[in-house]
Amino acid sequence: MSAAEFPLPFVERHLELRTLASFYDRAHHRGAGFLLLYGRKGVGKTRLLQQFFEEQDIQDAFYWQAPPGDAARQLSDFSQALRRFDTGDPPAPTFSFYDWEEALGYVAQIAERGDGLKLFILEGFTALCHQEMALSSVFRNVWDLRLKDIPNLRLVVTGSHISTMLREVLAYSAPLYLRANEFVHLQPLRYTALLDLFPDHTPEERLIIYAIAGGIPAYLAYFAQAPDMVTSVQTLCFGPSSPFLADMETLFDERLEEPALGQAISTAVASGYDRPD
Image (cartoon, rainbow, N blue to C red; front, side):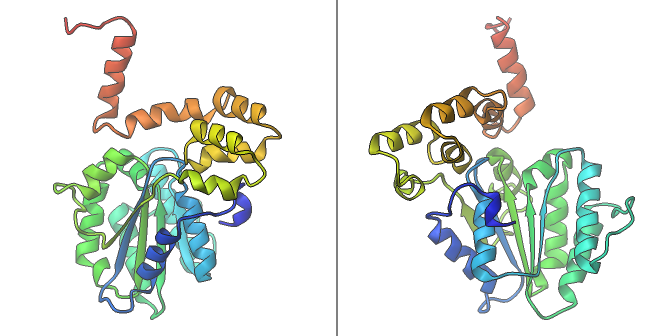
């Protein structure tokens, strides 16, 4: 990750950065560190991690973002990335750990080899849970039996699907309940952040931008890249690849424990079936 990948400068988030820094150092605690970073899609989780990397000057860390696809593809991609991080050489194209328990056991092996801090970041945990139903239970077992006792291990897991995070991590009945020792719930930027993001805009223009995009950096970036306000609004709200349209289904799903059932009911109602019979 580099700052060049993000069209907006980094603003606010100072409390979150201090939390990440404190978690990373954790010299006064025993055992491993497990931090959960979550928030809605586009709120800036990856950008926050990139800024944390730069400020802490972290050079040796494992960073992996879950790709789209089925469970087998995700496990294979993680396996390839982890082996490449460990050995420095690309593994065989067909290499993959047998399951997530074996893959996480390999994480433990890497961390146990040295005394220096070992940081592992897994982005897209909720996407993994949607493909591998028992994944959070596997994480719990490996964490309890092995990972939590490795004092130089730092594990950061991120997720965007709020209801999945509740079901798998935050709720009392969740498999990973009380396993994470730090939490960062990333919120949208405040309106005052626009003073730094758009210093050349008028107050009226900043109000319009915030009324449309809110504090979501992924949306605000459109107003930084387009040459004028009208083009920004047209691209963001009405373009063929508009995130407003693409995110609508995601924002609807992330509040539901059973997204497929919610979609089926909504489709039925939209088709005119508005009574139980």
